[in-house]
Image 1: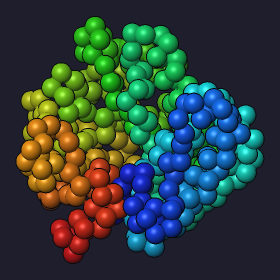
Image 2: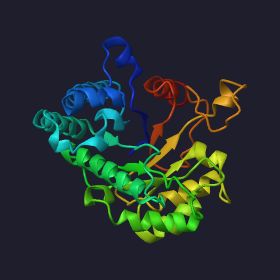
Image 3: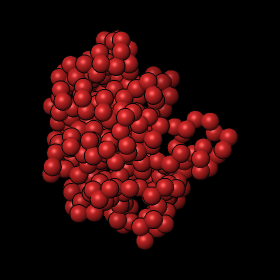
Image 4: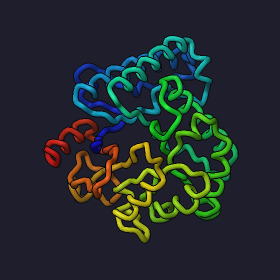
Length: 305
């Protein structure tokens, strides 16, 4: 087995050359005016283009890809089965799954930061559960395995009431998720010093509910806690099932490599400027760079060829 490198959501080449992308959306006012019918139309177009992205990835030997959570616009406002094009959408998503399996591609999700499973606000928790359950439903329609092979990656996303209490709420509310999500959910370390290191997540999330930890190299550089990069990566690796490749995230610091006026060390660069040290381990690396697939191709050419 070898380390695979992938990118997130937008394929800049296909969007520029053929207007192929999976982020068609609309503002709330448009949704209120045009309703679920237009949301269905946009979702159908997005999924058709997802097929093209999967095919393009295969042509470039890219075996890892993060799907956009924006494929279905305004999902909190409806159930997927209520979409007028649901049957067509289901057929196309099944086709995505067959292609991904044929090509040996790993597909992932990373729902946005508004999903706060550990919130003290029950309304936020309920919305998060609905959103995450819909991600699991989409993965089921694609035919992806109900394992962390098809991970749904989130953060704890709050420290309200203290970090330990927040992680306890996270674990308690995890039990309220559908099995389609519980079987796939993974949790990621943070880049803010007030939030969660790999060690925090290992001790108070993994040991409780057993979900894997996605190690983010850049986040660890920003907020390492007591562990070295190697030690944190190794600790995270112990949380992954032995038959599933460990997923990690990598980005370079924009303020160091591209924009010295940028004061936020957490900001991602357009490209990757650092060698990704896997410490002899087999990893799947999601490259979080603004140049997307171009950053992956440049990294492979510069560091691996």
